[in-house]
Every structure is written in structure tokens, then in C-alpha cells.
Length: 210
Image 1 (cartoon, rainbow, N blue to C red):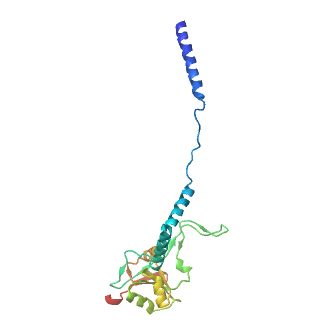
Image 2 (image 1 turned 180 degrees about the vertical axis):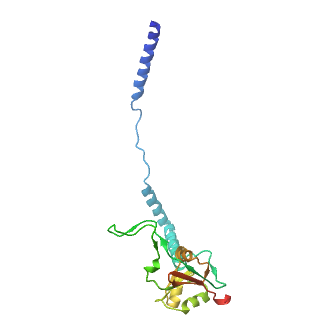
Image 3 (image 1 turned 120 degrees about the vertical axis):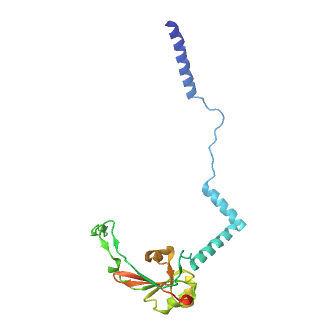
């Protein structure tokens, strides 16, 4: 038993001595702060190099040209064809509220589940004529009836600014196919107008297909 204590005590002392020594190893050699280049400084340096080489000016002109090109000729609405036969249908604009609607004072004026027809509250009464602006026959059709007071001219393809300069009328563009999708239009020219309590859509044949 005494022999076991003689072996155990020196072992414990040795372990504690090792632990204490491991806690304080001291400083060996100089310490240096980790230095990383600033991201902003790197970007600024890269821009200075691009400016000096003329690469930045080329990039700026390219961006301007692409922006101008997109404004003059937005991406065509995909999947739209030319009407080859007359078609007509109605679109019900009613919606069912999924949550209560409240005014700025928190007063609820419409409860969830209420069915609302926006046409009952809207005074919008213009015809919407959607066309391919690159088709001269469709452009003539769009301009043949009405004016800016009662008709909106909307392109699914073409150059709205060029047509505006040529004909002295405002031409809009169906960005992101909002109108085409809402009214289920597959071919143009198409005319959308009120027929309370719904909207009526017509696809009309013009030009060579007439």
C-alpha cells in the first residue's frame, strides 16, 4: 500500500507541474500584426488602373449603349403570335380579399373573404390596344381609331420611342407581360375594353391575314 502511494504522489506532482508549465510558455521571437489589404483600397486601385488604361471608359460606354438599346427596344413579350382568326372572351376582374384592409387610422373597411370588383370603383374607361410595333399593319390598325384621350397603345414588341417620334402618339410597352398575362392574350393585335361588370378582350386579324 505504501509503495502505491510512493508511485502515485510523484505522478500527480509531475502532471501538475506539466500543466503549470504549459500555461506560461513565455514570448519567443517578435509578434507581427496581421495586415490585410482594405477591400475598398483594392477596388479603388483597380478602378484607377482601369481609368488609366481606358478600360473604364469603354465599360461605361458599353453600359450606356446597352441601357439606351433597352429603352429604345425592350425585350419582346415571349410567346405572342400574330392573330390569324378573330377571337373574343371576357375576363372577370373580381378578387377575394385574403386579409382585412384598414385605413391609416386602423379602421377596417373591408373584411377578409369579401369579393370585390375593381371596376365598380374605377373610372378607367380607355381602350387598350396591344400590338407588335414592328408590324406596320398593326401600327396602322392601332392608330385608326381613337386618340390619347380614349385609347392606350401598348407594344409587346418594337421601338416605343421611335413610333412616338414618327406618329406623335404615346406608345407604352407591356413590361414583364403584365397585361398579356392578366388578360390571357396569345396573339396581337388585341383590344381590351370595359364591358361592365367584366373586361372584354378581342384578338383581331389585320394585314395579310385578313
